[in-house]
Amino acid sequence: MLTGKKIKTKGYFSLKAKSNLIEQNFYINNPKRDEIIIKVKYCGLCQSDIKLINKNWHFAKFPFVPGHEIIGEVFKKGKNVKKFSLNERVGVGWFSKFCMKCKNCKDGNENMCQRYELTCVGRNGGFANFVKIDQSSVFKIPKKIKSSHAASLLCAGWTIFGALKNFNIKKGSTVGILGIGGLGHLGIKFGKKLGYKMVGITETKTKLKDIIKLGSNEAYHFNQFIKFKNKFDYLIITSHHNYDWKAVIKPMAYDSTLCFVSRPSKDLKLNVFDFMSKRIKITASPGSSKKNMVEMLKMSAKYNIYPNIQEFKIKEINLAIKRLIQNKIRYRAVMKVF
Image 1 (cartoon, rainbow, N blue to C red):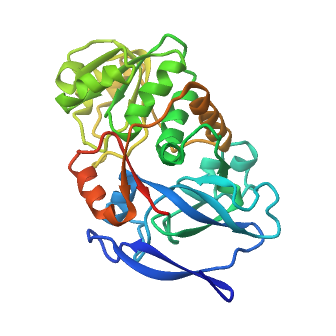
Image 2 (tube, rainbow, N blue to C red; image 1 turned 90 degrees about the horizontal axis):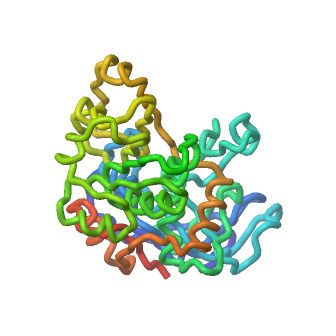
C-alpha cells in the first residue's frame, strides 16, 4: 500500500532473542537512486536466520524481520536502475548491497566487499510483503527455475557453489560434504555435475538413503567416516556442530583441503602437527561472487539442479523454524509470502 512517500507493509519480526516471530506493520521509504523495492513472493528459511534470531551471532540487531533468500517482483525502482524492469522476477541473497568501488568488488570478489550491507542485519529482510535492496545485489532469475526453488539457491546454492568452484578442485577428486542439510544436499547435486566423486557424511542415519538418491557416489555415517585414512581430497564442512577435529582430519588425503562454509559452535582446537604431517590446508568460503551467482543459476536451470524443499505459508513461519531446529526439514524450508 502506498502512503505518500512511504509504502505500508507487514512482516514477521523478531523482537528479542529466542522469541517467536510476530506479525507487525511497518513502512518502507521510497527507493533512492540505486534502490529497488521488491514485492516478495517467496523467501527461504536458513540456519543463518535462526542464528540471528537466537542472537548466536553478536551482530544481530533487534527488532528485525529475518529472511535473506528472497524471490519477488520489481515493484518500484530508483531513477538509476536501468538493468531491471517493473514486474520483472528477481532474487536477493545474504547481501543487500555491495559498494562496487573497493578493490575486492573491482576484482570480482564482491562477497569480500569492504563496505557491504546485509539483507536482514540493520534492516528488515524477506519475511515481509516488501523489501528494499540496492540494485548491486539483485539478480535476474532464469525463467526455467520455479520461484519456490529459486529462493534457496540465492543463499544455500550460492554458498556451496562458491566452495566447490573457487578452490581449484580437480575433476575426479573425492569431495566429501560433512553435514547434509540445506547446503549439503545441494553440494552433492552441484559437485556431481562439476565432475567430482561426491561423498555425503551425516550423523543422521535416516539420511543415508537420501544421500545416494541425491546423486552421491557414497554415503557414510560420521562414525564410519572417521575410520577412513587418506581418502578425501577436499572436505566441505556445512554443519555448525563442534566435531572432534583431530578425528575429522584423519580421513583427509595428503595435500588435501578442509573448507568451512559454516561456523562451528566453538573455536577449533587443532594440533598443528595433525595437519602439518599431511600438508592439509584449512580454509573457509564466505559465500561467493556475483559471477558465481549467475553461473550457479544458469547451471541450475540447464541441468535441473534444484533444492529439495518443504513449502510453508508465511503465517506458518514459527512452525517452520521449529521444524528446522528439530532437524525435521528435508532439506530446505521455503515460505510463500504473497
